[in-house]
Image (cartoon, rainbow, N blue to C red; front, side, top):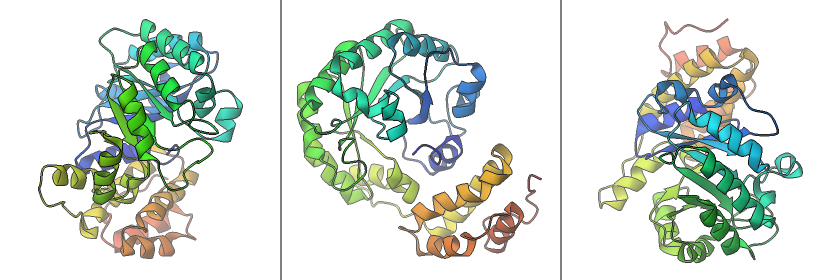
Length: 318
């Protein structure tokens, strides 16, 4: 979800409720020590005690392949107080894999171990170090081996996206294979992938044996999904977030986008979100159709005001 599920959308979605913690988009580590400015650009929650404005803890995610550089940057990042350091071994993007990061490393369990153990030694003992992986690169034959390498390196929790890099984001997600991993390690395992509804979450938990789930595109599509899943898990009626409640969230999202992003990025960022939500809300489809060809932030703001998403007095960044 790099490029959309950033600090702006983390702020908006955690206002709805149901989220235990968030993980930032990845911070790319090469062979240099990153600056405070770089960390804050990706995770401005660091100036708020590592939490979203709603108080939800955020873990900072690093992506890289060199144990020394990863450790040095993790130690530097830890100084700013995130609620954990997460290591990304699941990104399927070709440009990332081509440079030796993300899911490509799932071909080399010993390298996974080296990176995690280096990071674990570099950060304070009380700071959680967690990892995210896929089932594998081209296939899932080394899924358990990779998970055990991450555990042995010192990862305290493991998120598993239930597809390989080769699967990309094509359905289905192989939740039952996550159960094989869960049974092979002693650390908590969190399942991720293809969870769009409360029923998906129920079936996913049953197939994977995992109590905890990670949401991504599903919650971008349905901002009330985490709250609905939490309610259903304790036997309550899953709440539905109506479009009337989505509108002020859109308005708040727009104001944050205007305040924090460059003018040329603003309209596109709102359309990105609507492109997901239109699969859940017919009104989002109507909004997407109306805004699809608009690029001028003033015209977008005018539409939002006319449809009750934005107060008339809301100012636009020039």
